[in-house]
Image 1 (tube, rainbow, N blue to C red):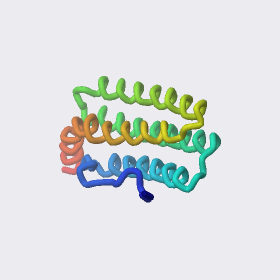
Image 2: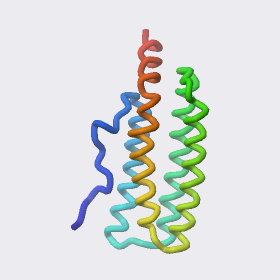
Image 3: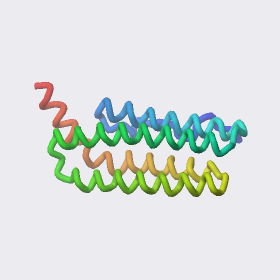
Amino acid sequence: MYRPLFIKWQDKNNTGIEIIDEQHRGIVSIINSFYFLIEKSVNDKALCISISETIKKYSHIHFLSEERLLKAAKYPDIEKHIAIHRSLTKETERIEHAAINDNDPMLLLQFMKKWWLEHINDQDMLYAPCLREYEKNADD
């Protein structure tokens, strides 16, 4: 059965921090584009490498944005959250290499889906109240 989207964005994925939500949707869009091409049988190592590089670069921008906001908001668990970012980055590289070596882009795609949805809905929701409060006070 053909599904045009691998990940459907839902309201429950929103943190309530506009730039963070926009970046999350951007990453999900890249993952969905990767899925679409695989479904259309565009399955080669160059594509896997290109998509992976795009996600890694965009993730770096996103993590930097998130970490700057967490620092400004004085989020108490910032070091733990930064460590999670570093761990996810390393794991992405490991999975990317396995996907390329095995010529199995679905391995990378499934990891990215699990990673992003769990990270957004578990880890990022922990800091969301702190950042929403920070943004509210910054507007006053």
